[in-house]
Length: 238
Image (cartoon, rainbow, N blue to C red; front, side, top):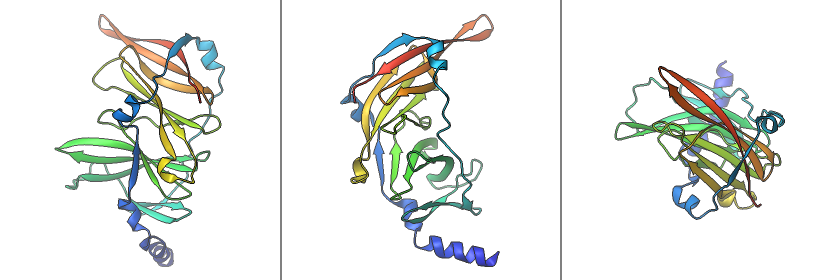
């Protein structure tokens, strides 16, 4: 056991820089303001159900200790501070929460937690297995956006955010996956949609340029809350 611990120490000693390395952030509001808006048409539950479910996110076990977990990349082993929900820590940065690995994208997914003015915030982080580069998907609220869903040929990512304090309201963002020859522009903004009419329960890709949203609206009937579902198809140009 001592030998394994020592080897881990040697492996990560030169890679701890990654904890605070530069992060490329995409999905800011001003970026989406300049991008096209998605348009939706109603479709059917049968069409949505006909699309096979895809398990795109795996969760391989990571090495770690009480304070860090380690992610293996082609550039070396990254040491990342673990997030502990009940930890009494004064630092603004609270740590990372591991979500899984996208084999098709060759990227790890994590949630980064921090505080500002005693308010908690979270961001979704993608780490490229090939070059150890970090990409943050900007949140439109306090919490992180939902995990992105890759299109069938990994040309685009779609994600959503349901507003916590506004019922039946959501944001949908589409990001484009570019070339790894220029890591800074590997992920870029493609299109978005904002609505106050429904929240998102799930999204399925039909192909690389169209997807169906399973939308939900909650309505209070006397003392009970009922859910109603509808389905919307979005198509966009490559």
